[in-house]
Amino acid sequence: MLPNPFLTDQPVAVSLLSRFRSTRAATMAFCAPLTPEDMMVQSCAEASPVKWHLAHTSWFFETFVLADFVAAYQPFHADFKWLFNSYYKSLGEMPEKKLRASFSRPPLELILAYRAHVDAGIEKLLEQHPEDEALRRIALGLEHEQQHLELAATDIKHAFFTNPLHPAYLPAQAASEEIAPPLEWVGYTPAMPGLVNIGVTPDPAAVEGFAFDNETPRHPVYLAPFRLASRLTTCAEYLAFLEEEGYSRPELWLSEGWEMMRAEGWQAPLYWQRDAATKSGWRIFTLHGWQALDDLSETPVCHLSFFEADAFARWAGHRLPTEFEWEFVAAQLAAEGNLLESGALHPRTGSATADTPQQMYGDVWEWTQSPYTGYPGYKPLPGALGEYNGKFMSSQIVLRGGSCVTPQTHIRATYRNFFGPGTRWQFSGLRLARDGAN
Ligand SMILES: [Fe+2]
Image 1 (cartoon, helix red, strand yellow):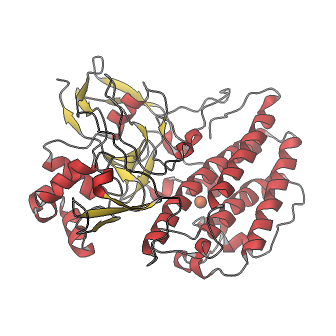
Image 2 (spheres, rainbow, N blue to C red):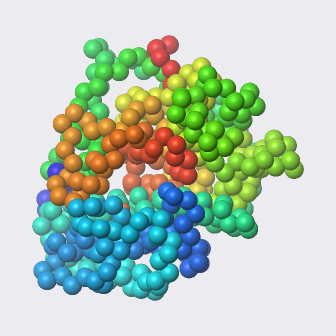
Image 3 (tube, helix red, strand yellow):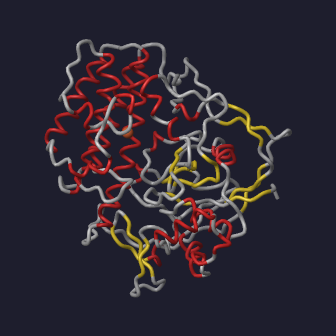
């Protein structure tokens, strides 16, 4: 059961309608600089074409809302039900993911018409003040839309990196003169006996507080005293790891990570490329095109796998935080930072350190050391929606905090992102942690 994020009186459907319009519009606004050909590219196994994202997010609303809550609903197109299903096996067969790049048909105009059809259907439904379950599904669909907007950004970044012309999504940006503040340690000692509450318990009467099922239920977790770095790890710090032969020292790596790094030929984060014309010898591909590492050295390092983040932490003499340490600290801070709406679309240099950790939200998803599993008492949503999160609870690691391409209204302290430990195409970086409060 999802928490009910709505007032029980009138404004519910109205506020949801407003959010629906702005969320769907944000996806289309992101697509504005893209050509129809850009939207066809699927340049790595993890990515999908932007055109597919546009269709699939509409499919989600059609399948889980319109088909279930609109009487005698007529699907927009008979084939879309299976064509744009991503991974919901209880709904039937779907095309292999790698085939999404072959979808030159249906044409983009038809996908856009599909979006308009679904938009009109949801708006009409909301005007009729549907039952609570329909409202909950629409709210879930908006969170889903935001997830796919973030994926569209990371997928098009990879697509442009793969293109020999290396086009930029945004105009080039000037080098930042800012210097990252010194790394400090902020200590935490949870009150005896060291139990802190993690996660969310759904509250049917809550006005706000959407949470995915994987954030539930709220439960106590033991935390020993720990320290968290006051800011994210920077490119300059990561370069030092590279220059001290970090990628050639097996003692720094988890076994599986070492094997993967060697097999994949990793020598640096994804999007770093050697460039003799720069002082540091490296350039980095961004959504603004190539930039010399020298110009980004104070910004947070990103596009690391869990294995690289973990090896760096070991080299630095520290460790990655657990997801519970991260949440305990983040829950005390406002969910603000360099998120999608800043328009930077790249991590930014941290500002002066206060007595609380900076950059907890936005910039980069922070790899934790925690495996992605269900909390005690976890129950997936009923029916096909139970496939949304629960079935991925194996061989994945939790990331926290959102990135520079995460929408502001999408992130919160309890949010659990998850990817396989070799994943690098997301804006994923790290923050160090260590044992003991001082
Ligand atoms: Fe999806």
